[in-house]
Length: 270
Ligand code: HEC
Image (cartoon, rainbow, N blue to C red; front, side, top):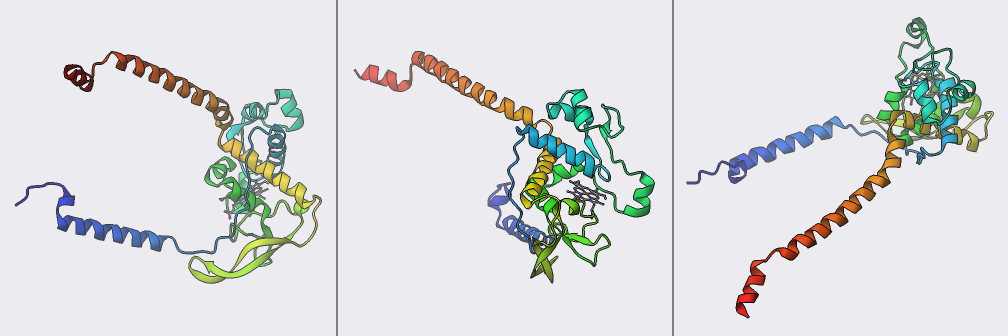
C-alpha cells in the first residue's frame, strides 16, 4: 500500500486529469469557429516621428471626433506628446471649442446618435488598445463599395461595419477582391482585399501615409508612456550592466577569502 497524497502518483487521478484536459481542448476548439482571415498590411510604428504624429493628430481630431471620442487624452496632454506649445497647438490643431484641459469628447450630440447612428461609435483610445497597428491600418485602408449595406460600404477586416467610409473623398472608392471561404464556419464569399475603383484627391502613396500617421497617433494616445519608456529603456539596461559588473567583482572578492573544502583537502594532502 502506498500513502502518497500527490494526484500524479495515482493512475485514477491521472486519467481524470487527462479526460478533463481533453474536454477543455474540445470546448476551446468549438469556441473558435473557423473564418477566412484576410492578410493584414504590415506597419511599423515610429513614435519619435513628431511630424507624422502631428499630421495624425490633425486628421484624427478633424475627421474622427465628429463621431468618436478620445477620452484617454486631453488637449493639453496631446500638445505635450506632440512637442507643441499651447498657443502653437491651439493655432495648428485646435481644441474644437473645448477648453485646453478638457478630455477629447465626440462632437456628435447624443440625440443625433440615438436618431441616426443607433450603433455608438466606440472610444478611439479603447480601440487603439484593443487592436494591433496592423489591424487598424488595414481597417482604415480597406473600405469597399457594398450596395447591400445602409452606408453603401463594407470593410475587409470588419464585416458589416456600421461606420461610413469617411475617407472616400481622399482615397476614392474601392471594390472588393472576393474568394470562396468560410465565415463563422459556413461557406461564404469573403473579401480578402480591395482594388481601386475611383480616384480620390490623394495619390495612393499620400493616402497610405495619412492612414499610417493616424494609426501612429492612435497608438501613441493608447500607450501614453511609450515615448518615456523608450527614452528610459537604454539607461535602465545600462544600470543593470553596471550592477552585474559590480556584483561579479564583489563575488570575486568574497570568494578569494573563502577556504573551500577542496582547497583544504589539497593542503592536508601536501
Ligand atoms: C460618421 C461617424 C464616424 C466617423 C466620422 C468615424 N467613425 Fe469610426 N466608427 C463609427 C461607428 C458607428 C463605428 C462602429 C462600427 C460597428 O460597430 O459596426 C466605428 C468603428 C470604428 C473602428 C472599429 C472599432 C471596433 O470596434 O473594432 C475604428 C478603428 C474606427 N471606427 C476608426 C475611425 C477613425 C480613425 C476615424 C477618423 C478617420 C473614424 N473612425 C471616423 C463611426 C464613425
